[in-house]
Length: 141
Image (cartoon, rainbow, N blue to C red; front, side, top):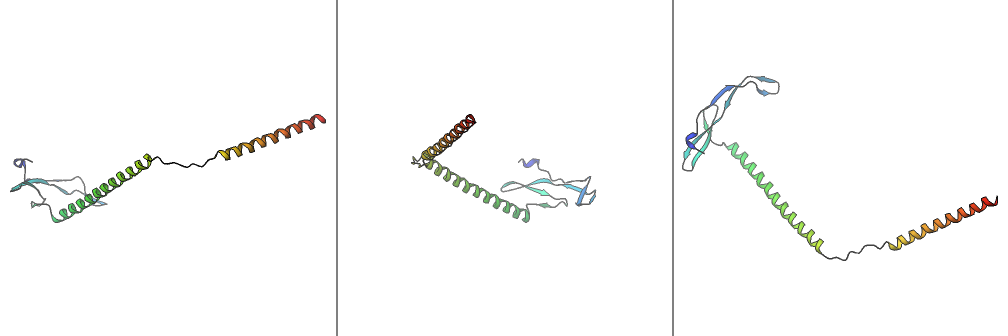
């Protein structure tokens, strides 16, 4: 940041609408905060000039808010790190299980299919026999 380009001005104008409550809109003055810079041993420090012309740094509420937000961000990042570790562990376990040459015992359904086929054949044979008997009865009449 170029410290020579910092300004100390404050501007004010009238907004078209300034709504303090939901149903009470009326023109109000608007103040635009303009950054200023103070130069100290650590370099240029940006400060803000308020609508009343008072120079403020980051107030305690803003510091608390920033601390809370930083803590929340740190917690989220920690959760992400933990989840990434767990994900990596699970991927390794999956790869280990997939790479193992396990003798998988599947049930043998061949005998079941043989029985089903025999039953179907028996049903068809009995239908054929019934059809032959019905044909013989019709010829006899």
